[in-house]
Length: 350
Image 1: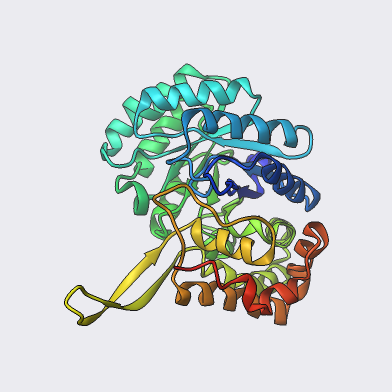
Image 2: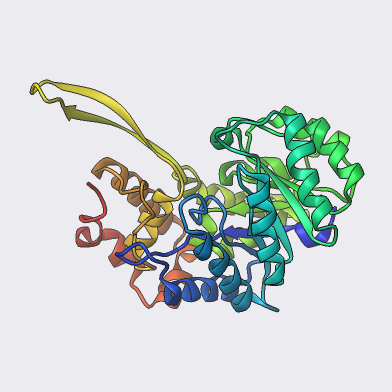
């Protein structure tokens, strides 16, 4: 295991103003909170940071700002992946100029290159272009449809020593076990799913070294603590924290069944899905950490969706308030009052 790529890395949300431009002051405040809570690393411009919808200029500026603020305090893993190899090379070069510790390259979305093309025409190209920069592939077929195969990942690792880890968000434990068997001991597997982190880290066939977390935007100290406990062999202690945070882990992405009225006046039931980062941004806004605004086409939850995430926060607050208390102290808010006060949540839905 490479000790550098262990612990909790927060997939940072990108705060926006009402006009959908980056709120730089709020971004700085959020980074300061993460640093204060002792996070291992920060991931600007991942999925949670809305990398797909920011401008090229904003993409580079967010990475530069986070690198500047975290320098000497936390490691920085910049999201520079794309469905275009040339664009990934460009963004990676800009990130390297900012002094990041590593880059995260997501499997190419929409145009669906197969695993062979991902290996030969994407990951190999970037790895060869930047041989002194650590690179972490990000496998998430739920968003990209395509997926780098473990066999091709093993070939990449053998050809490029700067392919140092993989962010696993497939939910396929058999695949992860096979990946571990194929890789050398210095190669790391990082959880890309908050609900699966404990299992991935405690399964000896996987031995994940940490997590790139969404919920650590809200509870960074607690997640860093329990991940480190697992690494130290304190499994029972870690399980307590993991169980306490499960309500939040389970609302990273949500779906609701809604009754809608059609143009002819009839009603039907339909299911709406609300993926990351809208649920976590909704919780952060309700708690008073920042505004909700997302880059369009992302928008708001329904009222049922807001109640789902609010209920998760309420459960954690009632059972283990210590995990949310740092939010109150840093952002100068009354967490209990924010969760119970309807006025803080009524405008966060359609």
